[in-house]
Amino acid sequence: MTELITRPAAKRTPSKTRRRKKAEPAGTVTPIESVRRALELMRPELAAALPAHLPVDRLLRVVISVLQSTPALLDCDRASLYRAVMTCAQLGLEPDGVLGQAWLVPSKGKVQLVPGYRGLLTLARESGQILSINSQAVHRNDHFDYAYGLNERLEHVPGDGDRGEITHFYAYARFKDGGHCFEVMSRAEVDAARRSGPVTDSAWVNGYAEMGQRAVLRRIARLLPLPVQKAAALADLYESGRHAALDELGEIVIDPPAEAEPSQAKEQAPSRSRLDAFAAATEMPMPRVAPNPEPPPAPQPRQVPAAEPEPIELSEEEMFALLPPLHILEILDAVAEREMPEEALESLVGRPLDEITEVEAPEILRAIGLWQPDGL
Image (cartoon, rainbow, N blue to C red; front, side, top):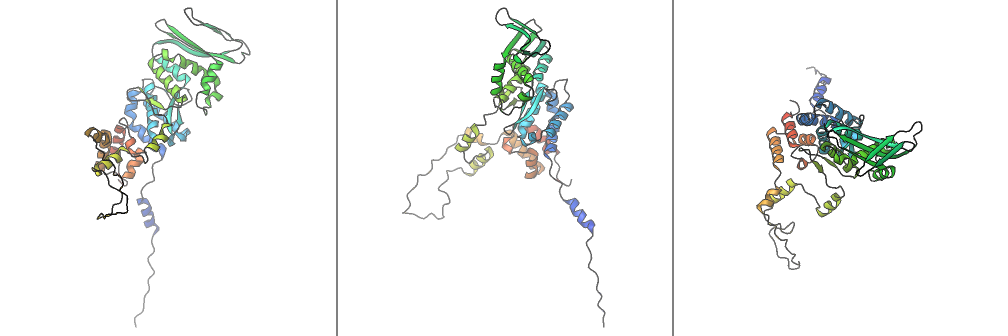
């Protein structure tokens, strides 16, 4: 009689489970790390735009520090963030908010660079055309006298002790060629400028005197060197509720008003991207018939014949306009060549592909070239 021998079942060792966990794909990239990588790809362009006194390493450290202290900036449109950083480089301003040169401000889902009072002074002094420039607040107990016209004069002697409340602000600039300019604003004029700006701007509450000095300094900005004019225009546009930045040529580009978006959505519902329009045009060379036809079509005497849609004839120029831009096609070719998954491209870009501008395309192409599949 044979004896039945039983053996214990083999137990799964914990090491196998650990090996499976190690084989799992790594976690998604954090927003701050994604922006850090994108800024590193922009390093050559930033270095080319920056003036000699501001190294690119310092600008990138300042921007990352600001993003860490203001997480709301990471929730804004990434293209506007990168444009704001490039605008900082073109103007040569540090957006740390500590020196008061400029701020990166989240506004209506976009990042806006807002040059400050000290930033305007810095740009004027670094232009090489200004001998001296300043802006001051005048108090009630100060000696203050001014006149416009052929015999211009500006006199201000601060009072001793209690100077009283602020009554005026003024700014002046003396040019190296011997010319000068100045502007005076009463407190009522400054308060009117304050009311016309963003309601949520707390800078007026925390630093009324400095904001008043900035307001009057921007009055004479139109007579100062071009970088000061551009910086002052960006600040004015922000306070008027408009979003703007500098393009690759250093010109101010103003985004369309946000109020126009709802009306456009009603007129074009559902909205389609240019790629969707191109796909629709290639798939439907002939006008579509009534939806959901039943093959074979049977006569329906009881139905009232509906008016057929008029055929849409597109010219060659109109068909070409439906094609994706050349820089979008280059990105699609690079994605196909690298066999890059759609999820990886979406994580890299952070928004619909047809919103990528021609200026941003080189950085995205370089990022695609550096991309490596998981596990390699």
